[in-house]
Image 1: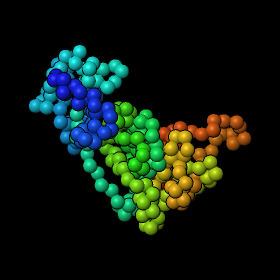
Image 2: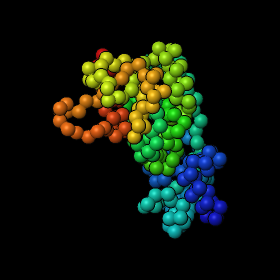
Image 3: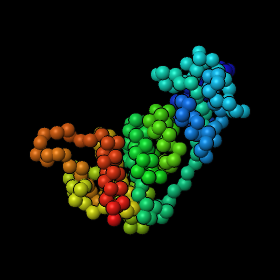
Image 4: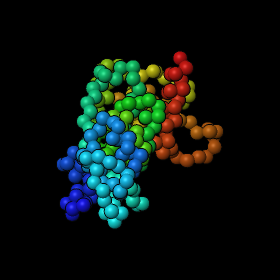
Length: 248
């Protein structure tokens, strides 16, 4: 590998470099193998001998792999993948369930939420502009391949939800003063809004939520944690939506 190639791979750990080059880094045989069979375009693969074959593959030494890997334990292959471009409009969401993330900033949480969306058949996630970047290497790894099937969109979340209000699309959000999730009527389609790890859903977004819900602690009168991790809460809510609506 040339010095410039090594510098490029390392630079892609930073969002600005990813935007500049239109590339993100994927690591590991399984993930790269899935990417090669997906619609995403692989620009280059750096791999140890015998791992992959193809015109885009460059065989590198274990020492070179240590230099380019962004993981604590270097993988056997690193790929440079072109960032896909997705479009989404609120009117396309009628009768579909999607997630909206309001300043979810922890890469691990975002990666887990993308994986949860994939598990529960949610194909689109809409993020506020200040949410974590879904092509951050930590996010990509945490999705376990789900990033290939779930489209993540970044937009002005307030405007997006205002359009959803105009189209009368239900908008659910989690709040400590919300109604018990298990007693709330849930619709087949709608937008589930999840908030920031520390502050929850912001005031401007809260004003656009039509259904405030609470995941109750059990038993209700027992001292417990102040709140749930946002990814855990997302999993619980998505599971309840799917359980309830699939049985109709």
